[in-house]
Length: 94
Ligand code: FES
Image (cartoon, rainbow, N blue to C red):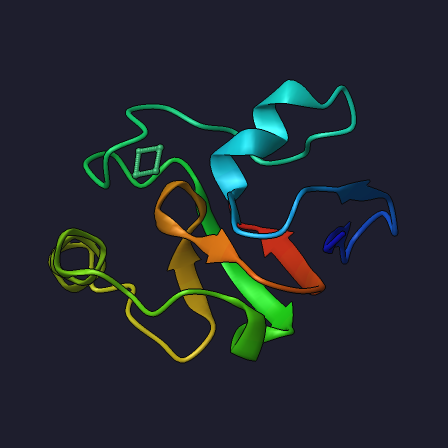
């Protein structure tokens, strides 16, 4: 079961394999704010501190919003668009 660790607090949430990070919302320990859930608002912006190889590639909608907001970068992702296959450490940016 993949573990999502929040880098600033060290808290973590376990999610089933192939979960979307949106599923964090079901946990009381979630530290990622979500808004639109559809790559339109940028509220769920995170940096993937480690485990990027366990995160699905950026889809077109995610890339478009990151480009529009001029927030693209190796570690920058929209949590609402990420599916995870293993452990990740993330840093919410909102
Ligand atoms: S929740 Fe709006 S972009 Fe992810």
